Image 1 (cartoon, one colour):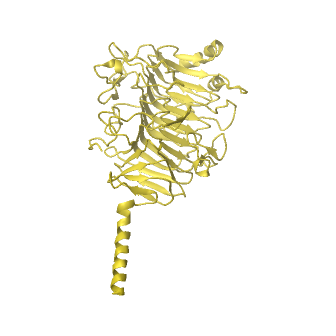
Image 2 (cartoon, rainbow, N blue to C red; image 1 turned 90 degrees about the horizontal axis):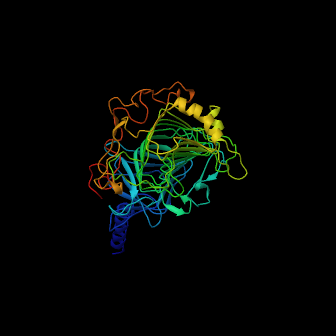
Image 3 (cartoon, rainbow, N blue to C red; image 1 turned 30 degrees about the horizontal axis):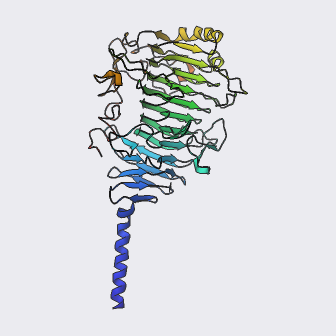
Length: 481
């Protein structure tokens, strides 16, 4: 009898062990909610882990990938951020993410709020932390994360560091507000190195910036920032990467009270002349502002919109072969000085450290060029107006096929359908791109003929999201979950 009882007990233990993964999750910190079937993820991921498209994953609180391991995410996988706990995914120094989707099956990070109720800032966002150079130090806290431990720090001495791969990835409704002027971005890069691969990545309706880089040298191609709340492309603290082919598309009514820009670039917030300098190079970018070419009544433009690009605090950012259209103000070389500093971004432009050339600016509402003083403006205009094309006509000259699609009630500035960013026949952006400047002779840059992010092929087709009613968070054509 004792043998029989022992055998029964052993059989029960084997059964329970065999069921533990399917009942409670496949990896540490994962629990499958028996009601929803969603895999709830909390705490630290310290062993190699794979997430698959047959499950939905819910980030609760700050989830850290640590211990130099890799988190692998399969094509078509949906990851949700929990609103109540401000869920976020942080790839720490030495760890990696391998999120490689496809145009048919993008990987989607989104809100856990039901479809129709989602909005900017529903959850934290995606944060990659690396060992690259920045001008603050080798162990720096990342914006938006209060954790004081090493796993929330970025920085080092290896600009070739590898944090993994993001390809065909959408990050939607992220950018939670943690406090005044303290938000997580859609995707944050902290000292991420050039060994990392970033291609075909969208941030949709971020509650703060879409993409923000703090130091590092990561490169990227084919980025989308759609309906961002604050800035679309924000560079800080010595970021020196290369970016080609990016689109920013704004909603007229959506802007941050702090002032929203297409590009915002600082060397360091204190304005001091500290190396390494923010010297990122952007080519073939398309920045479409809130002023839309639609019949009256046109959408009311939020008064908090500022500049197509604001370059300040000793930044040496360079932008070439790009298109800016429909912004309230144009290119601002801002020499305003925080207390105790003497920033002079305009001098970086005048001496060639910062380059703004071969760009097309159309339909700026006022101040196509702007500087902190009339004297400075006169000096920079000599170069800006010679090296770029400025036109007051918003799309009257014809650039893209149909970059905005609005509902009949245009006052709401609600977009419907899918925009078409391909160039029309005879577009002034269809030719004239140049890669002779030393900033863009590097083999990284594809030597295309057109300015802006698009030629005759729309590389956003099939996987990008524009309208919350048609593509809330599922993969294109998938059943809403």
